[in-house]
Amino acid sequence: MSMCPTCNGMVSIHIPCPQCNTLMLDHGRISDYYAPYSPYREVDHIKMTEPALEATSSVSSCLHYISCPHCSVEGTVSIEEVEN
Image (tube, rainbow, N blue to C red):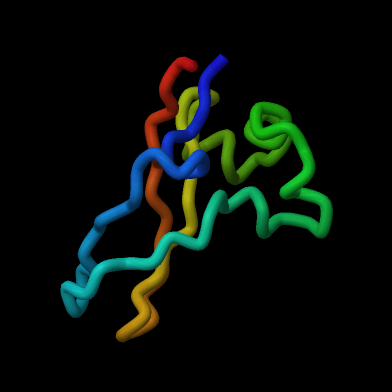
């Protein structure tokens, strides 16, 4: 079974904003924003049933929503999951 080291607090995201170089903020898994009960669904199930995630993510990665607190640039970053 694999897990996301960022979701589990083992690793932080340190990505500079491409526009202003401020560190981007991590807002968690992008799948949590799909529907009211998304945070409570199994992660692997979401990756297999959401078309947007299927094209951009594999079952062994976790897609996170990030944004810049200074200039409001938004984006996503794929975090490689590790075996536990």
